[in-house]
Length: 297
Image (tube, rainbow, N blue to C red):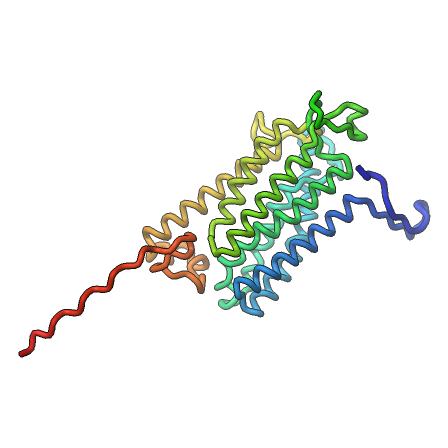
């Protein structure tokens, strides 16, 4: 663990003072890796140059807004719990919700060419989020935050805030889960299996919900009685995943009707109903009918 700054510049009491700790460094590494992964997969999926630039800029703006949203959500949690609006801490799920909302709102300024790549971006996004979150959780481990409940197991680790009491290193549990999920979603993108967003929402929503039972740090009171704030948000992720799954099923069974309900989601240039590529599987090939014999003498 490296909770203290590893680099400082200037006097702490002066106007000019810069300090860097491992948490900040790993957050920055995660953001850079997310942008690198997005650029790699967007090229791999043959996204147009104009769409690539638009979504790249939208991703950067969403990340900045997401970081701000992560802090605001935590400040609200603090206010709900204590009745005092304290500007301290941040929560990933708050940043995820804010960043996703800003990203979707950016589509208002997109032209038709950009909108046609929406499905591709929707499948690439989980890879970017997961790799950034992975490094973020490593940063939490270094900072000694987001730890678990006390344990007598050999895996228990004492953090500065636990006063020498070994606790579950839930940061590493979650980091391992995120890394595995990143590998799965990367494989899906490389093989053009278009289930990565649904897999991410279900996987992280359920995984985080269960992980909260061994979290030991103070995270405030959630909006749903009996659940932590992160568990309440995890329920929301599972609901969104279920709606997206229902949409994909309806898209397969009622393709014409769905085009009028959510037209932006029907603009995938790679969508081919005969191959069923949106669902990651190819439809069985049908044997061509024999030509009718010429009835003329």
